[in-house]
Amino acid sequence: MGIQDEYTLFRTVGKCNFSNSKIHLAQNKSSNALLAVKETDLDSASNECFTFLQKELWFSRSLSHENILVHEATLIENGKLYVVYDMMDYGSCTDLIEAHFKYGLPELVIAYILREILKALRYIHSLHFIHRGVKASHILVSSDGRVKLSCHRNMITVLNKDYRTTPVHDYPKHDTFLLPWLSPEILQQNMAGYDTQSDIYSLGITACELANGHAPFTDMPSTQMLLEKLNGTMPCLLDKSTVPHNTDAAIENMNPNMQEQYHATGSRSFSPAYRKFVFSCLQRDPSQRPNAADLLNHQYFNQISQQEIDLKTLLQPLVPVTSKNYKTTVAGNDSEDLTKQFDCLNFSTVTWDFD
Image (cartoon, rainbow, N blue to C red; front, top):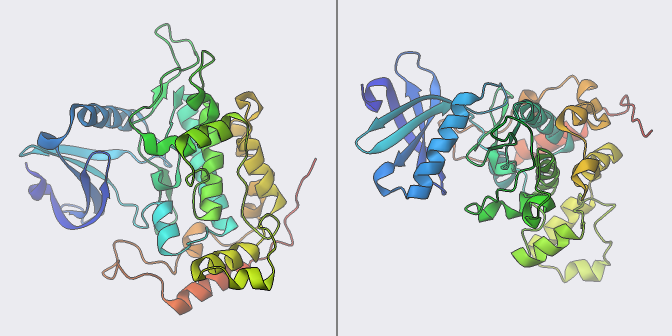
């Protein structure tokens, strides 16, 4: 049976630059379920791309967790590979930021997302794998509140041929765009190697990315970034406690975009618990970082249990890709209502533990 016999392919809703693939919105003809189908032209794929497609499919088949995106089926037809995935109709966290939250997601939304990604990492690390690809664009969100970690082509085991854990020395050379998220110990490439704690550093960078609207270190040359990381430079969350105060005259001399960013970041405040969470993830010494299981018990996530609102409800005003008007961004009034919805949440009952 061919792809058209089992699925109806609709519009293209995304692409994968690494493998030059298209992502289609599709529908299963038997169940009517909406799905995502990744189409890759194998005839034009490089040997490197072909190898990593095989690797990603192997890892996808080996994993089974509600917070990890795995493929449901694969088909090859006329030189093209079709991989069928569950539909995550809000796209990636990068999509959410670019479309609706230019200067970063609200802290409560981030807490929900990071908690689910930590569950995925706890599972991956329990199988003795390192993901090596934790970043906002690899975190997918659905309109029913599900969060999944994707893009498994860089995963690697920490087990040697005798099935004993050992430091890893492999360097993911092909994915240079991942450099801002990689830990200092991966970039250092020394004899000490690295282990699963390198994913925790990447999670810390991602936490800054979700909060600030952009990833740290992306505005500097790779050599400078390497030196900053090796020297232990720690990125920060941008809010009124970290954004320098400027005079009215200085603000007036800013261009409109800079003014908008200054007012957006300078008027908000992140919780001490969130700062503590990011600080613990970004420790230069990997042995000083908590593991995924410990981080799931971090005080930062106390705020979730104190709320009666879930991620699905928080993101409800947004338009999923499966909508007929999927290209439409949130209307002005809806955006204001969404902001008010976050502002009105009650945090007074949260008990922060600073011991």
